[in-house]
Length: 345
Image 1 (cartoon, one colour):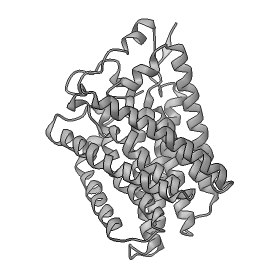
Image 2: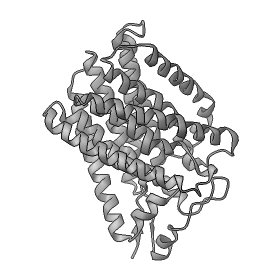
Image 3: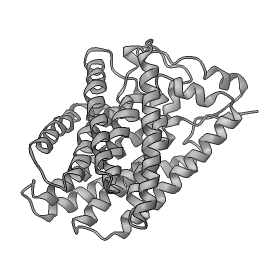
Image 4: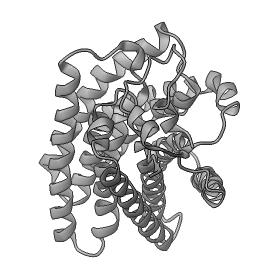
């Protein structure tokens, strides 16, 4: 029996679409757009997330032990946190306009699950044995993205104290995990091509923290918000030297790492424009909205083309190959085995 491997970063598609929905929601709040595009995107993102979850659970049922292997995998494991982070964001954006009470319950439950999963990952890493060369920006997801998205989501459903606590969780983890990741990127060998798109995630923490903080702070730009923006600008500028390597990459599921990261930047910039922190007219807002929509739309189009060709997910493998996926992923400096290509179709 052949088993089609379902990589954990399949959940990145729904996450990226949810990020774009948030950007359109921010634009609607700034009178730059109607509300219906955000609503449509929330529905599409929810359907994609549900489809991804169903496909992944089917894979786990057909491949015993797959969930445990993926959770303990030092390369792909962190991406599984998106299975919880994405619906938390969608509940805040999509359910709140319909029923704030229902949205609050959903967000609170998902915040608890995100914190528990983040704690599990952190405790697992603390046991030791994680090789420095295996770190990549995807390690931001369980705790940094989880905490900061939880903060913004809690603020959206009027859970102010919870939002402040989750902002603290995300910020402290960003300082700790981010310094380790940056040290690995600077002083160790380059990431393999399959993981290069995760470098775009470096622009996300400052942007998501800005969105969360401005939501808590009623949109007021102060010293702390300006400091977040300053670091965010540095990480955006740092993407310039990486552009040449990005352009050499083959399209894969990993390409979705660009979507939420830059959608978060777009949302933060729109909030700055709304607050008057950026002294420009509405034209910049329209340009930002058009650019992020084109980026996510282009990647979505390429994804649909790959799906139509049957090339989106890794090729089906027989039992022997499927069993081999339980083997540890080699360090990025080694020749990747059949686990690392899980990040590519």
